[in-house]
Length: 287
Image: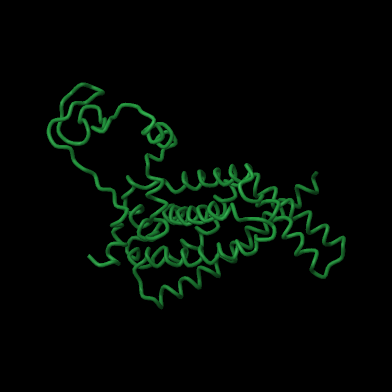
């Protein structure tokens, strides 16, 4: 098996399940059976005594619906993201975390850690940096004050509704992605629907959130520009890799579609940002 084939098949993260030998006794219904799961009640043969060592897996991870799939999903998001999405859309979902659940979970962790003071306060740092840039531009003090007020309102809106903001951003990416790539590569005969496109972009959003979580301890007003630049250096090639792995097509077709997608996304993003500014301005005027 070549290195590329190992990446395509997830060789290093593929879950290998050992089938038990001999007759098993179900601790739930008391029946004897062969195999990994009881055919009478569905309970797994790996039903251990509750101890501190498996408390986290049984009650915390399973309790929020991750079933131990989160580390597996995160690792694959950074070395075979496109193949992960292909597998998930094709129905191989047992060993992956639902991307929308993962997106909301990582957004909640991000807000929690930021609120606990891990690293700098990204909201305050972003606001101060933006206000400083506005002040340096050639505008009157009154105009600068007005722009800074809108900037502050935008930051307040974004970080008070962080999960909703990320979902809306995914929707902003979904529409141009679906328009450009719905019939690309192997999906020519069976095009992607809008829900599948949203699922693919949700995985991309999870990539971004994981990068944001790792960068959070390094965010200060003085370093925010550098950290943001490094984040883009990681995220943009990763997104390119995701699309390249996801679709089987010639390089020329792939590059043309990426150019069209970038133009459409920029348009949708400007509309999205404009709507946020209008919402903030109307709210400030009403207040």
